[in-house]
Image 1: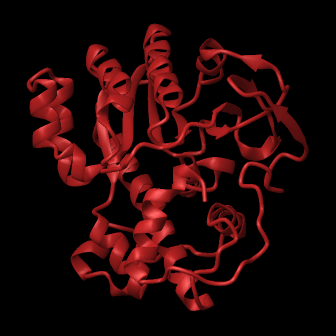
Image 2: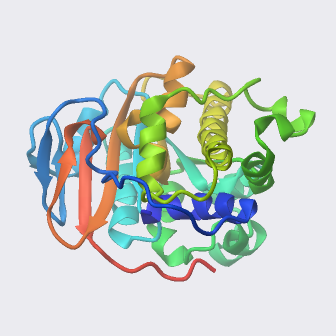
Amino acid sequence: MTTAFVTGTLLAISAMGQTGGSEAQVLNPNNLPIGKKGTLQAPVGKVIETGSGKEVGVDAVVEACKGKSFLFLGENHATMPHQQMQADLILGLVKAGRKVIVGLEMYTRPKQDFLDAWVAGKLTEEEFLTQSEWKSQWGFPYEFYKPVFEAARNTKSAMVALNVPRDWVRTTSRNGFDALPTSVRLQLPSSLDLTNKNHRMVFDSLMGGHSMGPAATMDKIYSSQVLWDEGMADSAVKYWNLAPRGPSTIFVVIAGSGHIMYGQGINYRLAKRGFKNGVTVVMSQAEKDETISKGIGEFFYLTKFDPKPASK
């Protein structure tokens, strides 16, 4: 199971009380038969444009965003080169004249006011981390994400809490979407679309071929993943529709790569609502160069594997 997927997936599995099961076919999440056909070699430490296979830099990603309204950045959590790349892209987009909005998986909707106060310079770093409850909201050391938060604050780029409250995900993983209270379901689409076979393939591959129990159990865990993506897409749309913006505005979504790879997660949910104008950058880790699918995203950034710090 990849690091980018571990936080929410383990939350769902824990909620179900499932810890083991039979092995299924293991697929490499970075080399799935989805989208653009063909494969290429991704070198460690480089950003590549998947269409051409060329090694590129931040400027090429910024250039690719011309005329686009969304940039999807899929990270491995708490991986310094990934968060630094995110910060560099925010700064690069602003330098190019874009008005940037930064959407974060790291915070749930009720914490939006603290993000507003941070960008406005009304809170010190210590006050922000304490009042926004960083440790319980995300848990990974803030030092990894500091470049992103400083880039947004220094450029006055709005930051948006994309994530839905965790009890929504827990309830769905235990009992399904229909078990959510009416007050919650009124904040989301009336039903979850669970029919996207490509997204299910991504989910299954990220689960590492491990079956956590009966098919019905896995279906509930999968429905919680869809809720997660749908909720973050919904948060982005709500903010986009309310925020002052113009032709130069671009919404940068920062989330685990499992939420954006192959255009099947948050970006898929946004496309269903008419927001199809985006660029996807997937970030991953490996010990050595890796064969990847050209369909994974417009850009791919592979960094040297680094063990994760404790999340709490």
